[in-house]
Length: 313
Ligand code: 5GP
Ligand code: MN
Ligand code: MN
Image 1 (cartoon, helix red, strand yellow):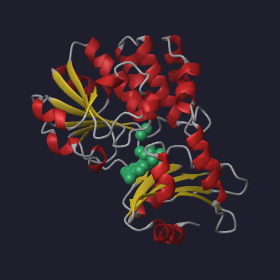
Image 2 (spheres, helix red, strand yellow; image 1 turned 90 degrees about the horizontal axis):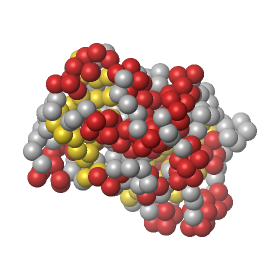
Image 3 (cartoon, helix red, strand yellow; image 1 turned 135 degrees about the vertical axis):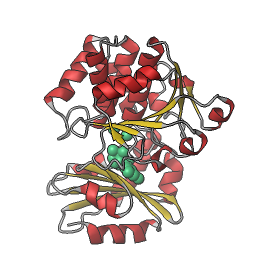
């Protein structure tokens, strides 16, 4: 494993003629935005580039240019193996799902997760950046790669979604400068936020039911919102953002979203004001950032909640 700097990363990309891009399963705005930005940049550099992801692109991000070119892992079996697999916004090998099994090329990783497990042959890691989209914008700026309006929308979306539209503690001057660079290059903040924040009556109905059962244990320092199997069936893959319903409640340090993704499998999202939730997620085999992390617990929802609460202050 080699830690890359901006020059050694450039040399690796320059040397590769064919590149497959991938991101973590259940991709968020940063995964999709950073990948689409990098995809178009690499096309401009004359590369043979494909995007292969082990999850569909969520509908709310499908307005971005080239989102329809993202292919499932099976596609890689018919493609020739690329020179390199470039993994964006994923901190562990498991997070890229089946792509890791079907792609045999050497893996390079561009990421911002403090919990990165250094699984790639080469890693360009910038944990002080709020988003992988912020890294890609920075690379384009430093390498004098032009940012087209469609790349700008994608990178802006990545940056904005990972820092809660510039509200979270990971928002820095550099984050805002890269967002400004995107806007200068044609990104449309209003169009991006309208797509990302678009909601539905179904989602409001789910929120109403989930809000009816929120809990504030540990003297109100923890806020828990849960999507049980019934609500998960109604929500489909549109399960982002529910954790935000409890994170700003006065006195809450750690906000928790529990999702029953199977009868004995619970997905956990953690957000915090003070506690290191990367460490708590790490206790359950997950990770992320100090103030935003996630993990999967192989227990039914109520049992997972009990185990999690033992680890929370
Ligand atoms: P979310 O709660 O939005 O799914 O994830 C919050 C942060 O934690 C993101 O940066 C995400 O990449 C990371 N994360 C979420 N789930 C996992 C997981 O199971 N493993 C690891 N390593 N990171 C995760
Ligand atoms: Mn992500
Ligand atoms: Mn990210």
